[in-house]
Length: 482
Image 1 (cartoon, rainbow, N blue to C red):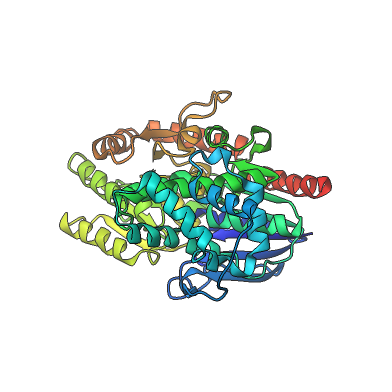
Image 2 (image 1 turned 90 degrees about the vertical axis):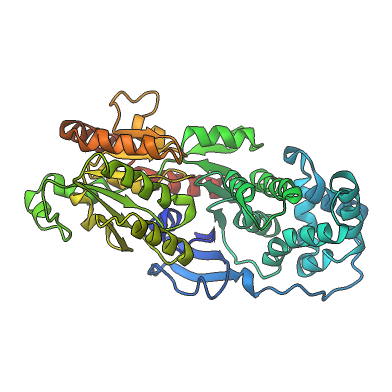
C-alpha cells in the first residue's frame, strides 16, 4: 500500500499538533509506503525539516508558493462552454454547496499545464467583469481584477506540477492541500480522504476578517473562495474525518454529505506521559524541578504564534499574580515560526517585569510535565489539541479556552460521567482566565481530583492505539471498496 499524505503549512517544516499527528501515523504504519506532499510558504521560512523521517517515507515533495512567478506561457486559451461555466462556478458561485465540482475538476485536469494562464484568458476576464458589475462596482476595476487573480494564482500554481503516484491520497485539511488531493484523486482515479483537525475554512475566515492584507470590500470574496474550495474537497473525498462531534456537525452544515463523515478522536500513549504518577523515582529525577516546592507552576505547550494568543496568556497570568504571589508560568514549544510575534511576547513580559515567566522553546515535553501543577491553553482556534491530551494523561488539571474540542475533553461527552478535569474559559477573557488560575492554584485537592479525572478520561477514550487502529481500518476498507 502506498499512501500520499498532503499537508499545508505544517509537516515536516513546522512543529505542532498536526505535524505531530502526521509523524505518529508515519512511524506507526511501518508496513505502508508513504509519500509526503507538502505545501510551504517559502524556502527561507520552511527549509529545515523539524522531524526525522521514518524509513517508510520514500519521498517528500514540496511545493514552495514563494517560488512561483506570475507569467503567461500559453496564450489565447479558449474554454468550451462547459469549461467556461465550470470556471464561473468556481469564481462566482454564491452558495458553495451548489458548486459544479466535477466540471471544475475536469477543467483542471484538461488544462493542467496552463492553469495559471487561464487567469489572463478572455474567459476569466469576462467572468471577472460580470462579478465586478454584480458585487464590486464601487471599487476600482483594475484593483478588483488583480485582487481576483492573486486569489487564484497560488492555488492554481500548486496544481501545475506532477502528482505523486499513490494508492490513496490523505489530506490533513481542505484548502490547498485538500484541492491537491481532490484533483490527484480525480486524475489518477484513486480514493481520497480528509482529516479536518480544525475546520480549515472557518480558520481562514477568522484570519481574513481580522487581516489588513485584504481590503474590506474583497474580504467576503476571499472567504467565499475558501468555502468553494472546501466544497469541492468534501464532494471528491471518499471519507471526511472529524475529531469530535461538534466539528462533524459543522462539516455537514457546510455541505459535506453526512454519510461521508466519521469521527476518529486523537490519541496519546498514556503510559508514556503518566509513568511518573506511579514511580516516585521518575518524579524525583525530572530535569526541570522546582526551586521552591511551594510554587504553583503553570505549564503551556504551544507554538509561539498569534492563533495561540500567548499575549492573553501573559496578561491573565500577570493578573493572577496580583492575587497570588507564588505562581510560575513555563511556556514550551517552538518559537521560530513567527519571530516578530515572539518578540512582542518577550516585550510584554518585560513591560510587566514578569520574572516568573520562562520560555523554553522546543523541548521534550515529557521531561517537564511532572513539574506542572496546572496546564493552560488560551488559543483563539483549535481542533483537538494533543497538548491537552498529553497533560491529561500526565494527571494535570487543564484550563482551556472554549475552542474546538476542548470542552468535550475537559467536561466529557454526553455518555461520560467522570466529571470535569479542568475549567473552560471564554476566548480572550483575561479576568476569567485569571480567576480560573486562582481557583486551581488555591485548591490542591481540586487539582488532584481533576488531574485524576483527566487521566481516567484519556485512558478510556483517547488512547493512541485506538486512534491508529481506526485509521488502519479506514485505509483498508477504502482501498478494498475501490
